[in-house]
Image (tube, rainbow, N blue to C red):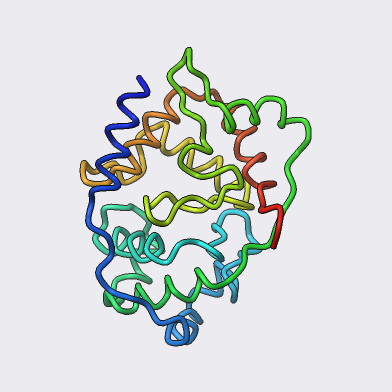
Length: 209
């Protein structure tokens, strides 16, 4: 994979129309009760197999819910929960969880030497761009470019997602530019690098609250 490929996909992502409905966090709080069993009341899941969604970008949450509902993102549990959601419901849930704060976590120091060079600088020889180019130095992503926040995410969940991307098993339909970017990046990563990056991401947080 060449960097030009990633740039082309990034341009496609930025050019794709955004979510058209604005969310209401107050309305979303009431609707979020059903999400608490897996993701926690404030979006900070306790079980590491379920992602933290606290602090995730509003539009990103809404778009993922739409992917689950359409079946383009394959997850039987989320399909059931999203099936009855309207676009406004999705936007409201996105607004509520984006207003919450992800609880910080720690990384395994043993993995930092492997993960930090990849996250901060990528690997030019293998055509791997720096993770922070899209997700930011503190992992908060970029809502305008629709790159999600990954800071403080459970290492187990991040590793599982990276392996899924690498294996081509995650909603890789042509109109999902983010999935295409991640699939091509993850394809170059070893199991050890995935484990290291997932741990490193778990420890990412902003220098200020």
